Length: 110
Image 1 (cartoon, one colour):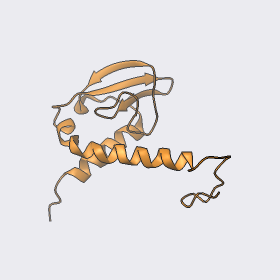
Image 2 (cartoon, rainbow, N blue to C red):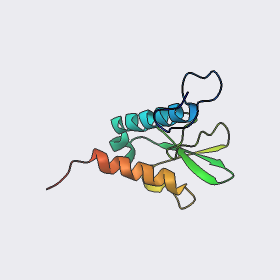
Image 3 (tube, rainbow, N blue to C red):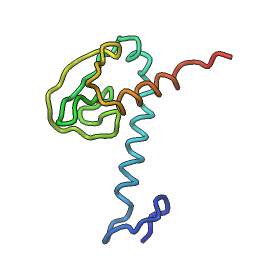
Image 4 (cartoon, helix red, strand yellow):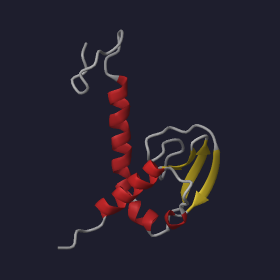
């Protein structure tokens, strides 16, 4: 079977393309972050940064493994922080994803 989304062969007896399913799941979790991203931006919700070999990744609010950059982090040292206090050691992709969500959540001024 060929995946209709990525056009790659679906291996073995699988009923769906696992990479595409994981990507869709990540997009759905990212979309759910819009429910509380304003509170994150205002510092009302603290974020959890988890350190791994590449540096600190910011876990999605309400998640214990999924980072904003898309990485799944099952272990590492956790540090609680606010959005305003994210440091330079934070994953660039995590920071960009958070900034993009904040931008999407703010009303457009004409």
